[in-house]
Image (cartoon, rainbow, N blue to C red; front, top):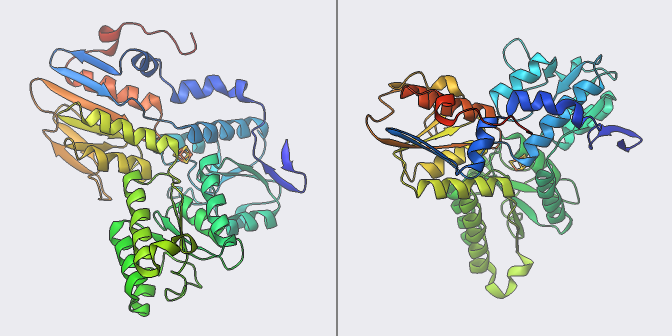
Amino acid sequence: MRNDPDMPIYRKGFGLKDEVTEELQKEYRSAVIQYLRENGFSLQVEGLRILLAKEFGFCYGVDRAIDYAYETRRMFPEKTLYITYQIIHNPRVNSKLREMGVRFLSGGEEGDRYSLDDVTPDDVVILPAFGASMDKMEELKKVGCTMVDTTCGSVMHVWKRVERYAKENFTSLIHGKYFHEETIATASHAMRFGEGRYIIVRDEQEAEYVCGFIRRGGDRVEFLEKFANAMSSNFNPDTDLVRIGVANQTTMLSSESLHIAKMIQEAMEDRYGAEHIKDHFRSFDTICSATQERQDAIIELGAKDPELILVVGGYNSSNTNHLCEIALRYAPTYHISDVDCIVSEAELRHKPFGEKEEIVKQGWMPRGEVTIGVTAGASTPDKVVSEVIERLLECRGYHLEDVIGNVPALGA
Ligand code: SF4
């Protein structure tokens, strides 16, 4: 079952899917959501209409990662299990893993943080859906522990792309967040071959700064200070912005990623001439299809004119934050991490887009007739979305069963 007999790394599960399915369904799935998916993605009672996005919740990468984590617990019931970071950015899922005895090497909570020094060759370490850096992999190999790698195929696709840039002597320009685990791992792969180099730009403003340097050159010291945390240690803006390949963190705002690629291309054309662009510029859209579908679905939902939109998901989830960014174009939008954020019809806890801390909003739900749009990030279980819908109905005095009756059980 191991891919390489010399390396204790499992990448294909343990064939225990059937044994964990029931538990996974109980923890994360919802018959109510299945019913709503099959019945128009909407629910209406007097005074309240709830519209669900056509795509939301767990993506294929998250599904697979959680499945492997549960299979790993079954496969190694007596072993100490670690995970390099949160398996996905969802508090409920991570706390469930903690209950199953999985220890966090980073991203854990107070009193629940372990380090690589704690890991022994007898232990098992899970790598999360967004992967781990090459340095981290090397460290774990040195320990000699067993590894279960749940890295999503779409993330590995980005790694292959930046590795190719490195082989072709192109600098990887990554649209992403330099502190995000996926981008840290991608950056490490951009250094894998030859004279690999990378620079990470977070948004169009940073891309514009790089474009200015491509066109006219500039203050090297200022450049190095500005991107101090977001470039390879050997980076030289005078020589490393001559051949650029663009890639992106899989969960970024896709329209922004495409625009940044275009900005870089135009800067290269201005500097070297459109006829030489192939020698100076490469681009490949590496937004994953799940992210794209969820972003398209919130646009479709927004066009239906809801009075407000609830986006459900972990506050540190990149794709969930981008859903908020899009939703805000259409209606007041509240990012909530779980159902308990809906305190009452009057009070709601939420994280405003672009902020780090949760705040309390009074009078969030308009009185009288209201249409509320609901979506959820790729790391949010259906069960949480179902509970949110139930709570919305309760705010208006309805019980879910009275509204939709007894829905068929999952798998029935
Ligand atoms: S958001 Fe995309 S890249 Fe990330 S785990 Fe899901 S499918 Fe994979």
